[in-house]
Amino acid sequence: MRVFLIVLDSAGVGALPDAKKYNDEGSNTLSNIAKSVKNFNLPNLSKLGLYNLISIPNSNPKNNLIGSFGKMAEKSAGKDTTIGHWEIMGIITERPLPTYPNGFPKELIEKYENLIGTKILGNCTASGTEIIKKLGEEHCKTGYPIIYTSADSVFQIASHEDEKIFGLKRLYKVCEIARKMLVAPHNVGRVIARPFVGFPGNFKRTSNRKDYSLNPPEETLLDKLENSGIEVIGIGKIHDIFNGKGISKSIHTNNNKEGMEKILETITGKDSKKSQFIFINLVDFDMLWGHRRDTQSYYNGLKEFDNVLPEIYNKMACDDYLFITADHGCDPTYLKHTDHTREYVPVFIYCKKIKNNIDVGIRKTFADLGQTIADIFEIEKLNAGESFKNIIM
Image (tube, rainbow, N blue to C red; front, side, top):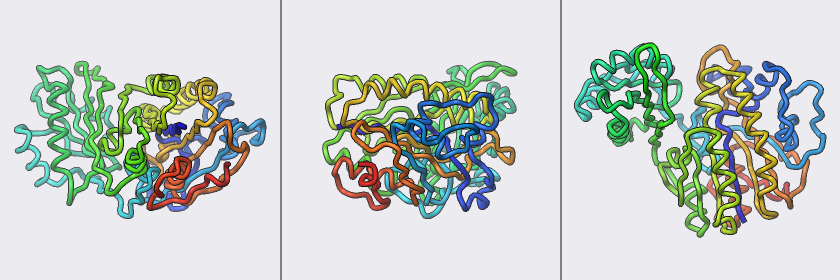
């Protein structure tokens, strides 16, 4: 038996009741995309119940459903990638990870400069594409790395991939130094390598991004599965989010297209008869289109994923399960800011032996999904979440 969990990074389905605290009132990533693009049509996601969760003009929500659906509220404090994924895997984060809207403290930056042996540029809140436009030329002249953050708990380091300027290996090294430094009491969620190439006026970020996360503070579903002899395969940035904990095998991808190709390869691979948990993150929705407020490209990406779904179904064995969800929102139509949005996330379920057209309701925490997967594998329960296995079987 295998369970596939695909995270459409940032594909939220409506503002949570506490969204006002996060300046996110009225956000609804998938619904607002549907209202903003012409001829919105995701027929395969609709057959899993998408149109039951968002309002689509002239749609029939109950039409030919082949799966079940619901939506989940985030119980953790925050709207970050790390805590969203952690919560799906059973950890509720009571206190939000720290953010630095005015840049990092002077003493922290001075300590970091001493550790890496050079000055830094930036130390501000910024868009990744804008910061390299602004400081890329100075970086090329001085060789100083660019440090910036966002509304999330992140310490981002941008540098040129050319070794004569900075180089990729050196970038990863200074990220590792930052990760070791930014543990307690700071506990910054992620250190992120943001490499770019090009020349002044034409800098471009590359796919060699790398995330360095905190260790999860307790065991997750991944650890429990691996301890039970079930192979855990992380595709995309899953390894980075969990800092490798509970991951048996990691498969790197550069974009959504590669991620979907790896899903199909895994389904039909030589180990396809093993007990496996395959955990996939498709990051382009968030990184390329959500934060950059590119609504049309976000929809095009959803369409590409929707087109692959029938091939996934056809290759799945009778006792394989497919879950599709998200980790937060990032509404590309939202005008107040360009950060993540505090939203419900969808949960879609497909398996050839479960009930169809079942609404599992509004779950109180993302951890309900992790608890359900633990229940399916019949392993030790998680510390958080309530299984909905009995509803869909």
